[in-house]
Image 1 (cartoon, rainbow, N blue to C red):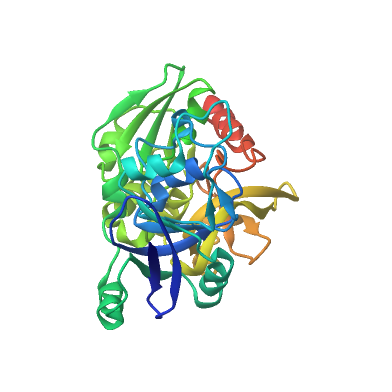
Image 2: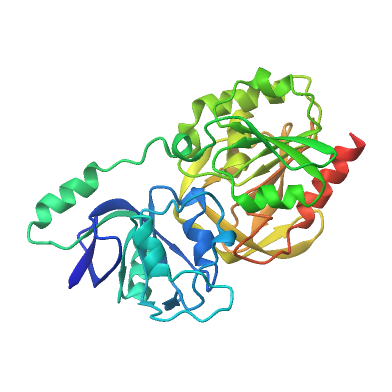
Length: 357
């Protein structure tokens, strides 16, 4: 049975249903990863988004649930050129289509993902609707244009404070939708982590006598998180002088808390192959990324922070090093998954500073 992805500009892409059968409206984005589809679909940063996988064959190695990046998948829909009929991997426990059905996530295969990706690159990220019936296009377009993404961080953040890990380094992590591998990367480096919901008041963290603070990744427009920005601002302006590491959304929120501005990228950075130059090291690293917003370099106060990393594709800000406090934030994902592990040194350098602070 034919089904359709209708974009807000009226373009229609045809395919066949996979996953759970339901209509859905979402923000349509593309990811250039060849592998790591389970990690992508379970990354909370994809909340409210439908993901177009640019690699033409998806699902060929099945799923191993221990590789999930959170407790459940967060994508709204999945669009692929071809879904592998049979998975081949000794670790595989489940076919991707069964996983999508079980988690009530709809999708399409047979989509011309090359053309769809070009449309998103030329026109920018758009909203779209997955549906079986396109007989009333005017009604569909109106529904799409009425759709708004709201409360994404509230939906994915931890609902309560909890501790994980048994190491000697005592860290706080503000959870805006943290990937599991951020936590795993810290645990294997001898950390005990207290995870706090995104809107935790600053005094709860300041009274915890932590050795350092991590601001996690997460979904959506950073400017929507007014309470979290205020919390980070209060921590920055307090006498908390322990090292702070910000990742992705955490990087943006720290920037907003210290007076910088953010803006929406035309089609975002989503994939494991983005070159980023670390200015201090004078070296280019290949990074894993997933974000639709960036910090406006012109709004960064040079008395507060300096740009430490830049994207070699488009020159956008990829890292900030703060002057008055031991704070380093990056737009990319040092924990990768999927992607290269070139940047795991960032955790090591952060924890070295924690140990001597």
